[in-house]
Image (cartoon, rainbow, N blue to C red; front, side, top):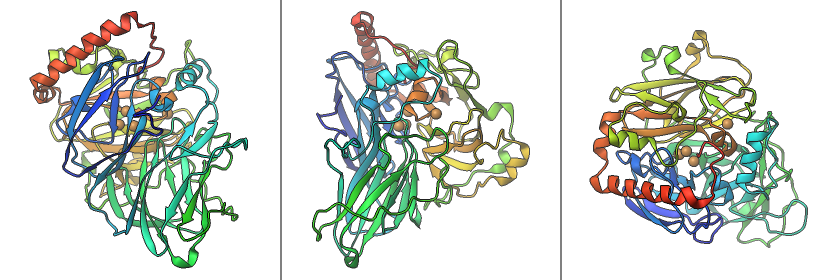
Length: 492
Ligand code: CU
Ligand code: CU
Ligand code: CU
Ligand code: CU
């Protein structure tokens, strides 16, 4: 499945402040689709968020839909289908929004998606992971900007990143994987991080970056003339249990100086220190934001407990005892538009009513499996995360939290068997998913839906948008009932 016949899909490029209009036609034979603009806040435009079963019904085959929204952020992100595991079949692509940077650079090398690749369809793997409690399959390869050699040695090409000697380059790394989390390093070169997700940070120079699923790292790379040559760009996967593994044991691309012959590098480099599948929390946002920690009291109300009960009969992830299972033909936004305030338990809604209040969330992860946690509609402040295997959050852990301009982004890692504390301000009325970005886990139910300031949501939706929403839902129902298509997972 491709967007405009390309893999990855075409890069959408725009400027900070632009209003963008994107026309989608579903030309698939047997599948709905739904386009989500990962990390874009959709301030006041929740209905454009592209989460099927949440803010829209899927778009049936043969039909078109127009998304329109304003870009209030800048940097690097991506779009992807939210229709079950469909993005793993190829329905994704980068987004670049031009704006200021915290460090000057000469050349923008553009978006650079890196992702796991499977010979089987995402649908088959979703089915398997729902029926087998063991570890998920290893990826068959890791692709850099859509290409790599076949690890079995039977063809393909390395991706080459071409740099100009004497110049500083910006590279926009994006992990568009289903299940593999990466550490990225370049032999003989440091990288300087200038943005984490869509948040510019003070320039931070490092030998390697951790790139969880869904995350972006905008880095600059200096290419001194004296270093002219070819160098491996290495991806390693933390050895921590369940951080992702690939049948390609040494996934790599090539950093190529334009002045040098095209050869494969020889120096394999050194494996970076194992990040243990945890994010670095040392990135400092340029635009500061702090959370009032005195307003945070750990309680049952702000806990989100992640569990993996014994298969019954399916393997389902739960948050606060519920596996999300959305109705494609009855999105939560439909309840909001109709003024219905009782929601199905399977939509796992969490209600936030108070305007502009800071909300604090303690995620506790019983299973020893790390999860890249993503929130729609907001950047969250990452107040703290435990060591792997640290157990549940205790009152004593509150002292370790950092609330003064901590790392801020839209995906961060919840450690295996540990906890994570996030904060965001209820400043964006809407209906926003928070979920694990491992495709197999969100299919397996690992999500909640924050219903933020319901009374104001309805007022934001124009009459035209509401009509288009209802018409599309009617067409989806007509299509789905006779399609032979089955919903086997959460729908997300
Ligand atoms: Cu998102
Ligand atoms: Cu995403
Ligand atoms: Cu997960
Ligand atoms: Cu999502």
